[in-house]
Image 1 (cartoon, rainbow, N blue to C red):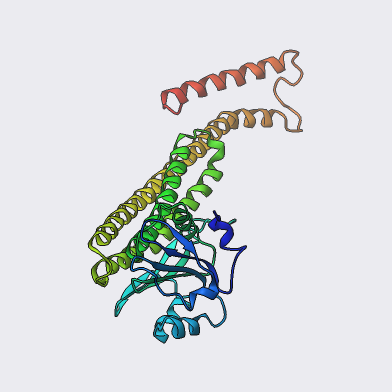
Image 2: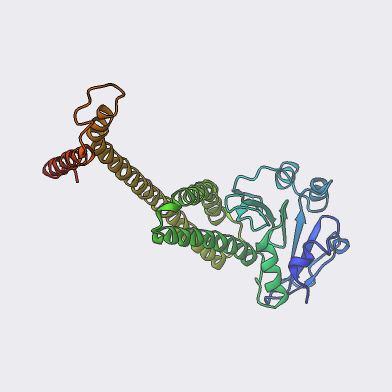
Length: 335
């Protein structure tokens, strides 16, 4: 059994990353790029699914000539217009969806797009950067537990995309919880940097997921007859889950903001306390410094300069001044 993660790169044929012919029972067989052009269903339950690299030269022309896709739609499927959207074109569904980028070095907000076209018998998905979701579903098909038809394949794709988004949100919530448990004030700068990253991720996910919610609603409301009632129920459930994800994103964003304000308030309180203590110390030593400075001037006639106990007399005077200051500070409730 082939691993889809390897098929996506190692066995690439032309623009074809991998292809499967669904048998209607949860399984399917691989199909090569040379077989795609001449493919015809042997039985009514068969569905062709091909996952393509949309950057392949001449792919738009192939879509027009082989699948008889109108030119504007073929250009949309192979373009860099990645804002989520969906519409019905005769008996076909056309959609652009977004997924979490799990490629090395990527952040959650660096989302990747997947274009989709399906007429009920043939499903074409296209991407520029590697996607985890199609490979996961391909593995399920190879294990015999995959989608049964084109409609369930589309709903499986959307469900996996939303699962990935939900995992990203859960990870951000866990990161916020960990930051809330940190009591080390010396890590303030690092904590604020992490919270800023979390807030940026929340905003990016919200920006991409809101139009995706609208795209799924468009699929549910305008899908052609081959998109059966159970598929509509599944897509409706995906829409509800995505709406909950959007609500969770708002909560995560607000939690991060509250935590950020709390950390800044604690840092400001610590700084204010330090400045207050320094002010108290300066207020204590100011009169003492004045007295010792006055007695240390290099002129004649300093009182007690020749007295054998002059140092201790000055020390006692300083101690008395310190005692009076401390009593006044306590009376004024400065500490």
